[in-house]
Length: 459
Image 1 (spheres, rainbow, N blue to C red):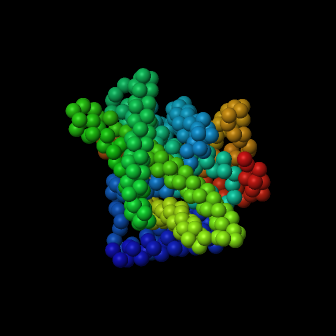
Image 2: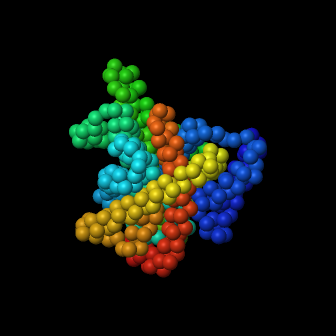
Image 3: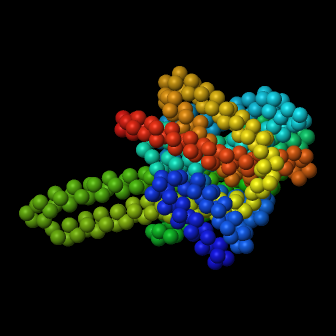
């Protein structure tokens, strides 16, 4: 176990050094270093040996990753860009699946894939990785609106893809008949129910936060809030059954975790803003008092103590967010090391043609969806204008992540194309991580001056 800890710490440190010195995004380095470590030290005990155990690990680590990314989202940004995020994370996913269904005969020539099989396959490869996107964006000066669109889409996209996968794809794969009424009803039930659970748990977390001024306790409460919202949604049917109901309703833990965090972050952000205003008022009052001939040392002392207390409270909130980011970095390192251990290179090589075809198809589909978004957004006064360079960033911000492998484990073992789907999903994750990241960084670097000017002119 000590060897594993040292390996994880070494990989993370080197990845962070590469990010600081060479501006290589940490997810890119983490994957590469994880593969190197795995092949150099194969005798070191593995973290996870197969897709099922890896999926369990992803589910365990997912809330902390969502917590870290959701703390970057502000409620005001969601209000301003809600229509854009609705398109990017919901409508674009649905349109992508429909486009995939139209292309399925050409893409899977010779295979008798059902519509349900096509839906679950594309739902898996449409789920994006917010960690990679946030990591890349953090190293560059970009317009705030562009960051909100890309980072917000990568967060909410996961929830939509999972809903499509479970409640549409797997539902149909099990032999049930899909109807428009069923899809609409289950979608609204899951989305609204998940948001409601997230907000309620978020306010419960805030109530507990008010009981402490200990920074470590505050960190643990933040973590408990995120995990609590996730767990309540994932086992929502148990709560209903406990109070005498009869339901199998399964909500989205991802969506609940995001909204619980947004709720906490909104109140914390307001508190930090109020603290800053209070500090400014006290500093002005202190200057005025100090200039008085008959200045009271007692009054000045009280003001200084109040300023010190306010600063401590503000800094505690900010450090708690930094602590969550550190936990997320460690979780991400564990995730990539585990991914390196479970990848079967022989299997990927066997299905190399199908992987490349699928990767190309998903890239084209995403490019088309972002082009449609640009057209719709530019024609709508309430939405932000999308230039060609913004389109490039949004297209290649669709890096895939570990949630796709969680979905893989939900597919019945009896499914005849399970091996093919495993190879395609893992292959697309690897290709998108390296290819999309390199292209995304190149686009940002080539347009860095324009992006900086856009950021400076934002209101």
